[in-house]
Image 1 (cartoon, rainbow, N blue to C red):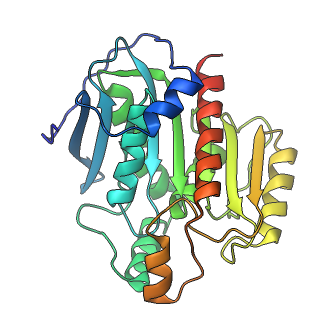
Image 2: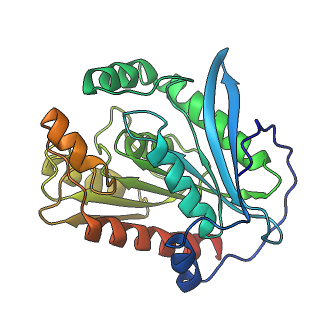
Length: 276
């Protein structure tokens, strides 16, 4: 594993992506010897952030890049694991940092505090997101014209807001993310295809948020696919959710079926948008 700090240089062309069957097989495989990972320190408005780049160094040509936005706990091992899964599926992935280096919550009160500071104004959210996006686009392995973003919980809300703001992304995926926002999508402004995966029993994402997002995106003429898993709670993609539920008495739970189906849907989305 290569853990050197990395400064990327831009160089662009267009490769072919892997077939869905091969991508899924690779995503479920262990990290190969060709997998490269880099811990990346970068600055946004004078503040230091720590991200994580993952890619297959043996793959030919340039490939699409995918940003991974962490849960409200901060940039943790789960976010890095998602980046590695994406790299195994044929993409270069960058697990970005929205809070700042060293800000990793161990208690919900800390997570809430970090999230409030990070989202105190939308200009700051966008600046932190787009700085990470530019780093990914500049990586030697990435085709800068083919970029997607996926987020979990807090991160799901972030990527949806970037779509609302008109950030130039090909696809956006939200897993158990908040769906309401003070920003409203405008007709003709939302560029990416959007997938939203939510739990039907998620107390943190109630049905009125689901209905509100559908109407908002219909009014904005956005391309939205929304999947609600019956009986599934918040944080269903994260195997660590059950420990969190027990430790902090929170209504969260891992669901293997929902996690697998949402990942498969994401891989189909990326294959479609990046091969258009």
